[in-house]
Amino acid sequence: MNKPVAGTGGERYVPYSERTGAESLVYFTRDLSAEGLRKIFAKVNKNITGKVSVKLHTGEPHGPNIIPRPWVEALIKNDLPNAKIIETNTFYEGGRYMTAEHRKTLEINGWTFCPVDIIDEDGTAALPVKGGKWFTEMVMGKNILNYDSLFVLTHFKGHAMGGFGGSAKNIGIGCADGRIGKGMIHQVPGSDDPWSVTVEEFMERMMESAKAVVDHFGKNISFVNVLRNMSVSCDCEGVRAAPVVTPNIGILASLDILAVDQASVDLVYALSENDRHALVERIESRHGLRQLTYMKELEMGNDKYKLIDLDNDERMITAADAVQGVVPFKTE
Image 1 (tube, rainbow, N blue to C red):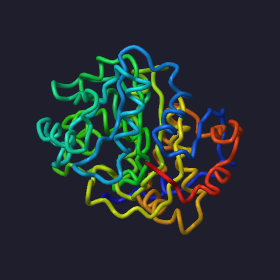
Image 2: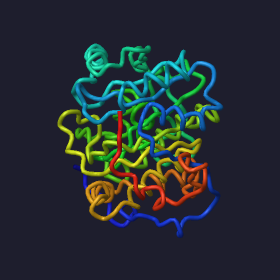
Image 3: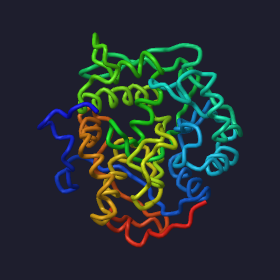
Image 4: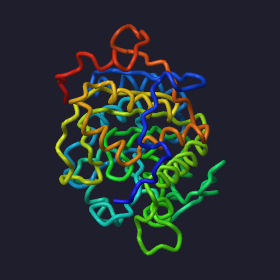
């Protein structure tokens, strides 16, 4: 594990009262089911048109915590019948390192009900990074250029390097190709260590990659985070993931990538100390909160938002209101 850079802020949670700027809309439901996913997607689907891609973490073989396949199948068959799931090969060796083994993993995990485009299978394309301090461009799987819209469907959870994985991690790492792009994010140029960047530099590089994707799709992109089975481990750890100890919360959606990731973090922090301890420790020890502050610096969205409760007549609520009475869950 790389050492954090002291004093740069990624270990400090910024309370809502200290945030400035405009507010975005973030929708919330406690309904962790296929119906709940479809209901909340309907709030952010207006610009998902043309050739549609769905960026999803499809998981290592037999991964226990990924978004349930039947939920995604119901959404795509009913609401996005011509969409393709997109993925890229991994930077680390495992069940998704090379295209052939990646396709076997997709079959194992049940992602067979619609086409899955491994977008770096046939090469790469560079997307510009506007206003970044680490990159002027990021290398992506070239098939990303084949789509008009991107629906970012994310299992929100912890992450060994990033602290947490939300929508920004899903596209920042998940659209970068498996060798060049992911290497640019993880490795200091000229270093022999493939994991050589410092923790907060890693956050910034990852967010610049995410910005390249957001800018590329413009208004034709939307975000859903599923806060369920939130291990401190990423789905890239598969069956080796740490046990889930954080309670399920619900599903969030927005047209603003920063707002949806910030709201997801806020909902975790709104849990009781006992319920949030493990995931908060993972986030803060890895300086993961730098993802949020750097997205704001890059003008990728707002860290203030109106949280709209779809379960209660779309009234506006706080994060603390949202997590009250949400456990236990009945999930599919």
